[in-house]
Amino acid sequence: MAIKQLLVIPAAMALMIAGCSSHVGPEPMQSDFGNSVKTNIARQTINPDAGAEQMAPATLDGQKAEKAMKTYREGDGKASTDRLVQDMAN
Image (cartoon, rainbow, N blue to C red; front, side, top):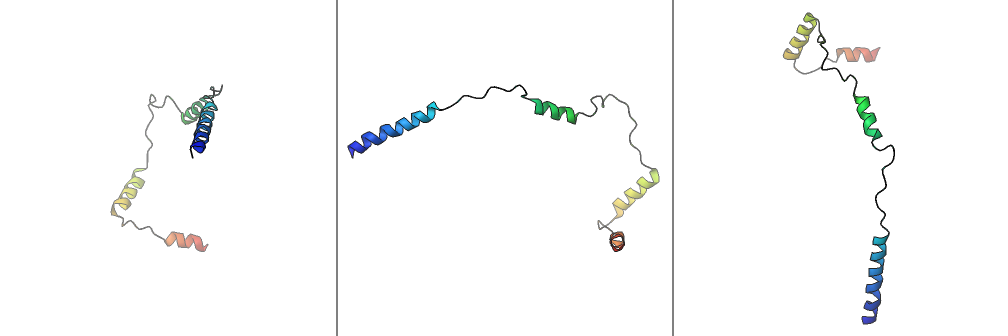
């Protein structure tokens, strides 16, 4: 039993030390590091001066807006299926 311990323990320690010695440091940064973030930021920036411009707000015809609000407020939340059935029949 003592001989097995004398062989097993040093063999296990040798394996652990060998595992630690094979550690490679971090890779150096590549020349294109950060390009994906820069590209995403550039694609998301449509108009950087949007806050400085004085643009008229998008408008909606008053009668159409009134009808839409009335339908929204007085509606029962159920959509009409008449048009859907009619369109599918054609």
